[in-house]
Image 1 (cartoon, helix red, strand yellow):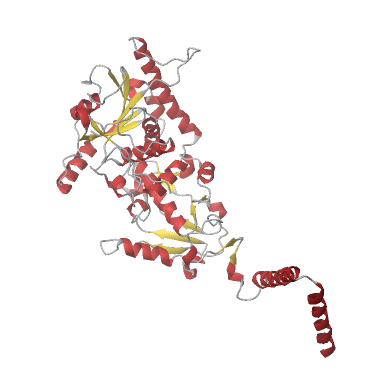
Image 2 (spheres, one colour):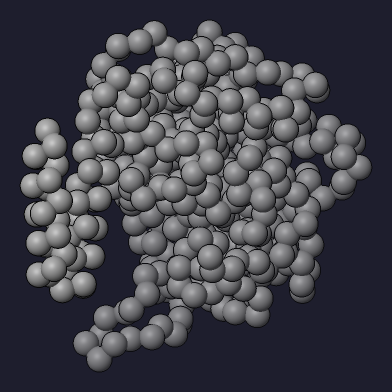
Length: 453
């Protein structure tokens, strides 16, 4: 043993005498790196927890590091998502942003095809991928959030059931504290965390508007539904072209006679249905705000005073036909504004093939793509459309719509704006939560308050 140590010492002396100092330092550093790598990756008892099925656990203190992407072996499961289309979109976004906070993949949730506010047992479930592209969502939201299928589960452990609190004592702070506890190993070790209790729309909101906007950008309709929406839009533009051909409307033509821009149209989310009028009047009394409800006459009057409209122009009326009691919504419009709803447009056969949720999704797409959109700032449907349109304008480098042309502008008809028209409306992208979009606001402006990160 002494002879071996003596030989090793001689070898080290020989190396140190003959190697240059720089090479010697490199040699020693390489040995240290090899030893360190061996210690970390050896399957010693007590070290196996450091790696979990191909993805490394990120401690809570560094949970914001997303360079490795969202874990594919840990999942979050949520209750069925219910209510109207855009309430369901908000609920889905809130659920998957919660999964992001926990660095987990969200198991594909069930949406609700029917619209029942109280009879939960009558809600007809519909899978997320019957309405939205599953693969495209993951592609567009890659490394931000991830959606998974139940077939991805290994079922090695029973799910950890997390009961969401409720009532006034369950504060936003307590809710966030509960989520942070779920990032600790004692809970995080479970393959699935299953959230029980109230559905995601009613969860406390911890995420900024910009994060919601990112999720909504990744939601694209499946081809069948998207094509139906484009058929409706094509019909609207076709009628608009015929109306313009009857009068002398100046168009900007290319040298080959083609027109750069398609025939424009206006979409109005006309909330005058019986259920809405009951709701908004109660809301006005409760909040002491008189800018929530709008009559048919007020909507028509304010739309007519939007400046810069090139007439004649088709006005598409997005309305819940089954809940509408006033059949005179097509009469009383100012000359130059040509109103159409589904039946007069000749597209009711397209809509009636589908349940309520898909009908709403088609209407959403038609309104979202309109050259001018006019809605109610206390309607979730209108608010999410304006959010998506604001996001598109920001993508074009426009962070303020004040004083610009009307193309792709949005307005709130329940709030009086300039020239007796509706108030111009962009989403406040700096908001720390989705509160004003989920529940409405009278504080709208033509600024997005967007700042690059």
